[in-house]
Amino acid sequence: MEPFYLTLFLGTPIWLWLVFIGLVGLLLAFDLGVLNRGDKEIGVAESLKLSSFYITLGVLFGGFVWYQLGSNAAAEYMTAFVVEKTLAMDNVFVIALIFATLSIPRRYQHRVLFWGILGVIVLRGIMIGVGATLVAQYGWILYVFAGFLILTGIKMLFIGDKEHDMGSNPVLAFLRRRMPLTEELHGHAFVVKRPDPATGRLRRYATPLLLALAMIEIADVIFAVDSVPAVFAITTDPYIVYTSNIFAILGLRALFFALAAIIHRFEYLKQALAVLLIFIGSKVFLADLMGLAKFPPAISLGITFAILGAGIGWSLWRTRKDAARA
Image (cartoon, rainbow, N blue to C red; front, side, top):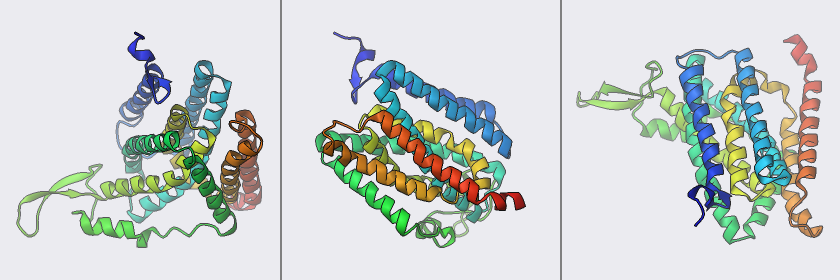
């Protein structure tokens, strides 16, 4: 009988899952308990340093994947990591709108984002688990994912996205109607006890921080509709899908404070993402046409870097005059 830690879970030995879960737990404890023990504003310089730290860890974990699972798995992990990191940039814009609409001060934003990431870890795990089960039982689902990505990319490229108007967002309006809510903040508390105006009894009220947290979680579910199929089109290995997702998201909180200030410099990144989604969806069909089990991971990684590099480079070049004036 083989040891418990060698037992396969979703096709990967349990000990590899435990290493990943342990590392994520240590990072979250270090982040909340050491880096951000009190309420404070995170400046751009600190944001960039923390983001570099998380990106480095994500890349190093890719080295661990290469050592344990081979070069193909590592190439798939890096491709998924880069794609997820880039798709998360659009999420940053929406989070910034949520904070602005609800007037959340910068010193409390990191707390909301921290607990938001905990929710994302759970929600993405559920969505990826369901997706992996569907792909394993019904192989044709992968082609549905691929077709969805191609259509999404074409829509983004030729039609564009709607402007986000958070003030008239129906989900926000619904939550405001249904949640007992205070008008003002109460420090960094998500919930406070206040007398009910009708009965005089104490009851729990949500603060705007909890409302912001709920909106961020809902926004992530919406974004996951694009990002999860994108990763499954890169690889169907649940371990690679989940670890790349989580490492890309872990650094999102750190990156937010720097990226929110310069998101306007990435004016053409949306078009690059559209092309990337079309490529990721197309390569599922291309692999079949070429008689391959899957599109070569190393080539996929190279094309991903080329598309995103072109989009970022062109954006920075076209917005250089605005940056100089600023």
